[in-house]
Amino acid sequence: STKKAKVETEEDIGIDAIQAVKFRFVRSPADLNDFSTQFHPEYVHQVFGEDEKIYGYQDPTIEIAFTADSLKPFVSIGYKRETKNSEFNRTGEAEKHDLDAIMDETYAENYDTEAEEFLPKLSEPFTPYGQVVQKYTVNNKQFEIYKTTLADESFHEYNRRMQTFVLWFIEAGSHIEVDDPKWEVYTVYERYQENKFACAGFCTMYPFWAYPDGERLRVSQFVIFPPFQRQGHGRKLLRTIYHDAVTRNCIEVTVEQPSESFKTLRDLTDIEYIVESGYFDWCKGADGMFAKRPFTQAQIQAVKLTPDTIKDINSKLKLIKTQIRRAYEILKFFFLNVENEPAYRDYRLEVKQRLWHLSEEVKAEKDPETKKAQLQELYDAVEEDYNEILPKLAKLPWINSQ
Image 1 (cartoon, helix red, strand yellow):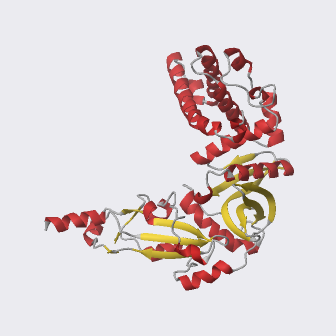
Image 2: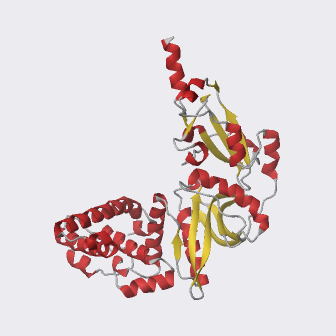
Image 3: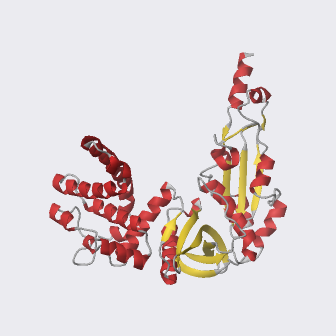
């Protein structure tokens, strides 16, 4: 009887939902039997609850295949058996999940469960919605970015299917309102075999009116699907949005609640964009290539970011002022030798001065020692942040070319 009790507790602790859910994109009927391209969601709390577990089953799997172009889902739910966890339920800790009902809710009851229903959808003709705004090549593969708005009602159904990925790939993601035609949507596709498409990711953006007759663009959702990550698509997509912002002459591009990974992507993209646009030329040598690192103390002291430069970059490139400042500090830190104490001290003082202006708490503090400690704490957090970005910055092609 002891053995039996042990098995029950094992079964009832729940199964990690991130591992149990598996996605893949399918381009042809043959792909349906190829599981090598499967990937997991990043978040499941919006679907299965805060503890991210599935209760009531032994070895549950939820496999979802999508048509690569139209993103139509094919769901297969499997498990060894249902667990007897009635005793567990009495403790009130967890109810058994009804997996079919959860899929019905997530995919609005609009999905296939039989291969015979799903396979014909792979040969349906597909044309991306909207206009092509960018074309580029990665690893000899062709990619195109399309832009449309929710004013196009024929796009709504496709948008709903895209929005389901928000639940799985954005931590605090929520669906955008389909009935607001002002939403703008950028979709990235790999174009293969002349006119076949595979969706690689998307971004939603909202234009806000700004007094007296301008607009601010706010990036809301930004998703590059895992099979396409770390290939530069995120930077391409963000640069496409910046280009659009310049063309429209909006005030600037802002971002709604950026995730940690998006902040890094944005930092790298902004640095690249600023340098390529002819600013921060202190980081280039006489030959126009990247200057040699590290800088001497005199070189570090000579590098400054004036209010005029910030204003100019903001007006011409549409980047927000805090991001321009951040790009400058990261790049300067990249050229700094922290072993060179005088140069390092000058850098710390410059950053602390900015932090002092930003922090009401530090400004209000009367005790000099406490003030100093507070500033140091703020600075340490910034430096830790920058240190994580430097290795990624060093990998950018235009820095590698030095």
